Image (cartoon, rainbow, N blue to C red; front, top):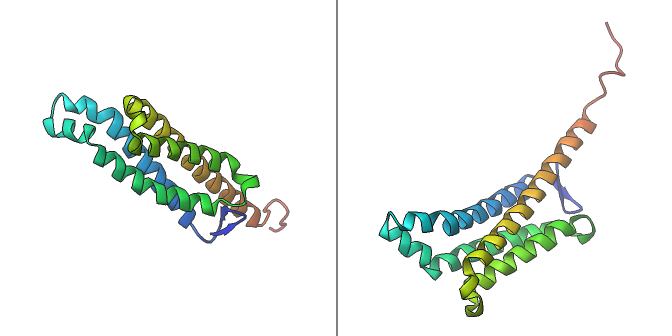
Length: 150
């Protein structure tokens, strides 16, 4: 698959893999924010991890390059603005929750919202690429109904 107009087409699946990686990181962030507090009542170490700002910052710093790379690969904006706007909003919320003290009181809902937006954006882009690749494959196949033969 190859990239044409910011979309994945048959020849290069790197963009698709990055979207899955980024969506996976967003889901990991969601699990961190939602599941670890539940585990905190069971395991003291999980409680320390769920409250450790360092973990939040590392997850955001891992998600940012994948999101920026996928955004860069999504240019031009005309065809991919839903991804770009949703991903930028999600990343901005995650960065705010991880690095701005003013958001500390609302850290969990801001982080969850940002992770959901970011994961949704990457999954939308990934599904769009798969749909386009499948469509390209169908168009490349010869039409069997037009072929005549015994």
